[in-house]
Every structure is written in structure tokens, then in C-alpha cells.
Amino acid sequence: MNRPFIDSNVILYLLSADSTKADRAEALLSERGIISVQVLNEIVSVCLRKLKMPWEEIDDILVAVKAACDVVPITLQTHATAIDMTKRYQLSFYDALICAAAVLAGVTLILSEDIQTGMELYGLTIKNPFR
Image 1 (cartoon, rainbow, N blue to C red):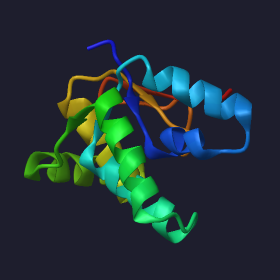
Image 2: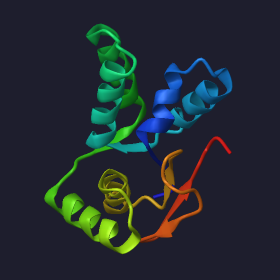
Image 3: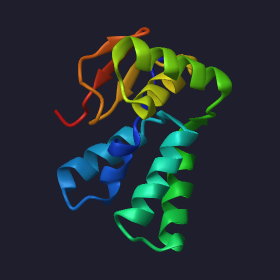
Image 4: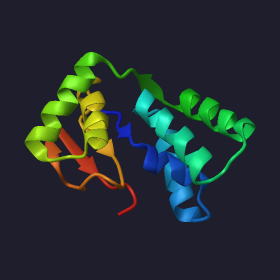
């Protein structure tokens, strides 16, 4: 699959005052990327906790993101693969869940500002789309 997996930190730049990063995030979403349910959960968490957004606005963001991306589930296989990745590569467990969901979706590129750019694992390459 040649569409990228997009991490929540990239999508959240849609809400940024940094217009360059917001525009880049919007362009990436227009390419119909892949996300997991975890990405949706992280978006909700940041919108509620850090940005103190009302539910009406959060709902609008979620509808737009789900319309722009294909969403893959988090399964027991995702969980097991993430544990293996955490042990092998010393990733945080939640970064490993992102990577595991991407691998199981057949993706070869993850766009993330949090996971080490240039890292390669399980046939994945991590890239910071803002560099």
C-alpha cells in the first residue's frame, strides 16, 4: 500500500496557528491516508485536555478526519505486534501501537513528528512530514 499512515500529531496541526504546518497537514489528509482508532482517541484526548474544545467542535473534527482517512481497528494482533516492537526497538508502547497498526494495514510509511524520523522497522519507514 503506498498511502501513508498518519499519526495524530500530524493531524492535530490542522488546529495550529502555524499556517505552514496546518496547510501541510491539510494537504496530507487530502491524500487519503490511513489512521487507526488510536489516532482518533488521541485527537479526542488532546482536544479535550489540552485545547479545552467543546464537544461540538471535536465532533466536527472527527467527522472530517474519518471522511478523509481510512480507519483501521486496534486488535489483539495489533496489541501483540506492538508489544514485540516495544521490546525489540525500545519504542514507547503507544508509538509501537501506531507502528503495529500501520504494519497490519500493509502501510510502508508513517508520517509522525513524534517517532524518530528515518527509523526503519518491520518494513516501515518513519518520516517527519514537516522537515
